[in-house]
Length: 334
Ligand code: ADP
Image (tube, rainbow, N blue to C red; front, side, top):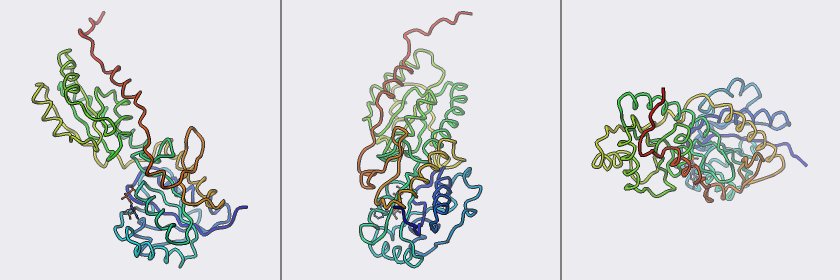
């Protein structure tokens, strides 16, 4: 039996394109089924301050196409304390809110889990992070857009790299996981991809680059995840000692968080927002809504951040094959 609820929704931690589509789906699904919906501004910071507003279906008009989050997001050190979470809980009660939907990453889910362990509150998470580092969903909301943004930048860098015969080391986001680096590296035809999940072999990297250089290659691109233990400048210095290639470093940074969400992210966010509300109405608790093999799944929040999502190593092997040099470049037959 489903129950009518007072549902709060917030976005927390790092912003990700597609968060707006998720908010819209939560609000519209919730209202359609007779629930009362509240938007909480600036994540747990706004929750502690009581920045809570009742929403109607028109509050979320025309946001599906926008990057960022209309509820804004924040990081809150006060929410790390029990006192901070108690303030948040009291504000939820002040508005009669009995369930909270949090769109965010692993930190945000830890916060939600703590809150519902300590106080009588129901909580469901929606994976919203460009890093794609949550267990229990094949893709997180924002990942696809971030990959496409990084890919666009790599394509442009490739143009200048080949014009000047340069080696570019391009750092993409991903503090603890290499999903963005792997996907952008493959999509951008990178010669090498360095991710934190695989220990770096500097000798092997230099040997590969040396072979590329000697084969007369005009340009080469290394895509590096920011979480890789050796930083871009350190890697550059090590390569420079061995090869006389002109090497440039480019850190893509926050452009990867911005931009209009791709169709994939809008559709994923809409589905997970819709499912999260149905889960709340069915009294599911302490779980994250995700999509695994095209099936909606609910994973305990604790597993979503503690279990490691595997990287498919075949993609790295494949990339080595695709980037491997022939001993002698083929003669072009004209
Ligand atoms: P993300 O959700 O993108 O991983 P953060 O790691 O910054 O982003 O987490 C967002 C917020 O979640 C933090 O600012 C903090 O308020 C809350 N949070 C993170 N970890 C915990 C924790 N262990 N206990 C309580 N709250 C937490």
